[in-house]
Length: 191
Image 1: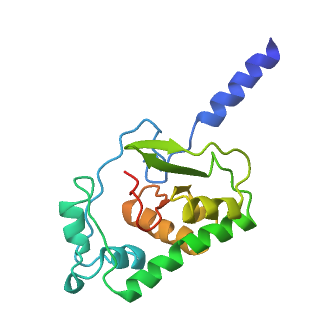
Image 2: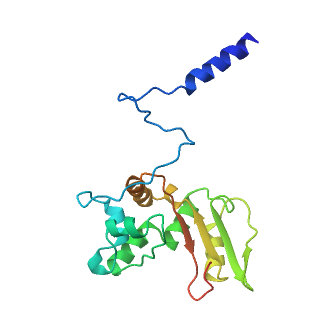
Image 3: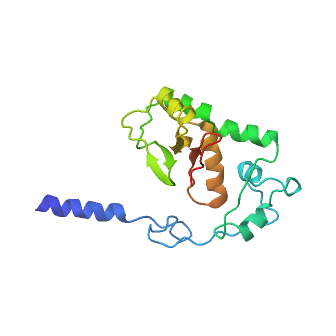
């Protein structure tokens, strides 16, 4: 009984967080409501990743101020590659070839790390695969059987994608992640 009481006292001591030097708690309680972030001022620069992703206004993109004012937490923004340089940069972040490489070099699980599916009669049908993914099997389902590949958290395998997410976390002051959806050419899109 005494050990139980001592354990509870230790838990209480661990749960008390020290106050920040200026008296404010540096880490809000998990249940605290997150305040809305302010759009960057004209003098604040976006990360190179977000600036590239949004594109320059001269290339049909939107400015950071416009994005935070009109889109962020309000409505979707469709971003397309503006030119070959953009397409090449996006391809370097993640591509079908890179995904096959990650699968062949890492222990990627069919159910935890990726989903392989197709659509028949407007219904999603998930391939019933278990265990560690095989890059040859994945390639066969994608190229010969027109299956869509959903790859979860690819930043775990890609330093460049991890760095891109890190930049976005700094811009948004929140956690960011990625998922990749690859649909074979000339097949029904994943919706």
